[in-house]
Length: 223
Image (tube, helix red, strand yellow):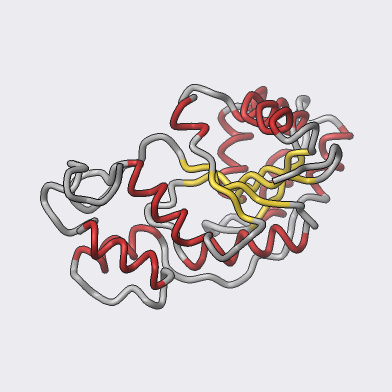
């Protein structure tokens, strides 16, 4: 995809285990409300699962590919698979350079934002300097609560505070957490209310969340 300098590139980090209709709905909301040129799904290196053996990262990549195939402004990157120790500022720098100076917009939930500022205020300040945040309310954590908790922080300069106040977007109503979807899949229940048909078909085909020996790639159709 040809990118002009100065355009907005969205980065959507997450487990995507599996990628759901909720993820896609949130991605579209960020794309439209922040006028992003395109949006990149960035799965984390390894994730824990509450059902059976962990799903190999190649399966998660394949499910994302299946889900975004018909969204021309969505992309997928395995950057964190090949650079598992990269920080958020380093990741933003990489994608900004890759896309010829585009401005990075980092999508984050209020629950993760609250933890970031609570536990790693220095890192949080660097993140705000490296990119524009796109904040969505989730996890029962309101954006106003996050701002209230940050009052008086010396690391949150007035410039950063103003920037943070302008980063909230309207969060669409979504249903179905990853844990709920995995449990339904383990019970061989229909997933059509929570994932695209292509993703459900792949989960069935690869026997994800159901078979005892799912970590082996042999016979899964993933190379």
